[in-house]
Length: 333
Image (cartoon, rainbow, N blue to C red; front, top):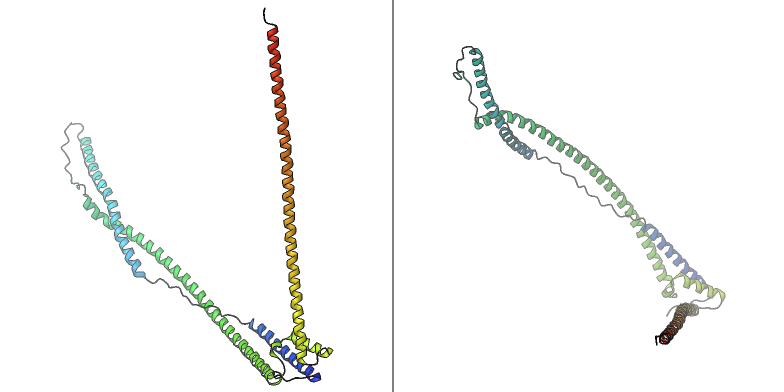
């Protein structure tokens, strides 16, 4: 059984309830404002790129390229060396014969043949062996150039990787510092929230200690308390149960009025829908009447055309009959 308060004591108690509710609402609003300041930490990852340090593989590839290019260039140079050697031998024989002929042009002697010493044309194998040093020099130059380009590109890539890793490390460090600030700020906010919870518990304890023995917790909100205070001060109620009864009646009235408003709105919607349906039906009737008029006009026009055709046929038949009579009367006798 709840304790019954009356008069000034009841009004004072109701104002005390109102003050507690105001304090509770203020705490809740402040807590919501503080909670909005809580921030999430930033994902921080220090993903470093790896530099390429495998030079042995490139050296092996360059060595293999040197061997292959040497063999290729030797094969390319050898046919030319064979051709040049052959042309040199032929030129030496021709020159020797020409010189001998010029010396013995007066005595008419016959050229005895080449007596000098001249190298025989080299074979492809010998030319290939002779071409290897030259091919090796060319291949070595190309390999050195290619190696310089490759290692320069690799060095440039490593420099860019170092810059990117430095940038990532700076971002990671900045994220860590920002996260530390966020964590510190969130800890302060959590301390404030804990203080709000403690104050809320104090208010609840005060309610349970001083107010719960006479005030109903079902009406622990501002609208109900303000209504009770107004009714007690106006004198329409002298006790809390009487004020509660009046408040329930007021809620019931509000509910009835709200239901009536809802019904009126629904009736307006139904009437509007009916008017739309009637308008559509009127439009259908007008369309149907217009169709009937058009059909009637078409029927009249069709009958008129049929009558005209019938008259034409009658006139044609009469004309043919007159022509027959004329032909009969004018025949030779």
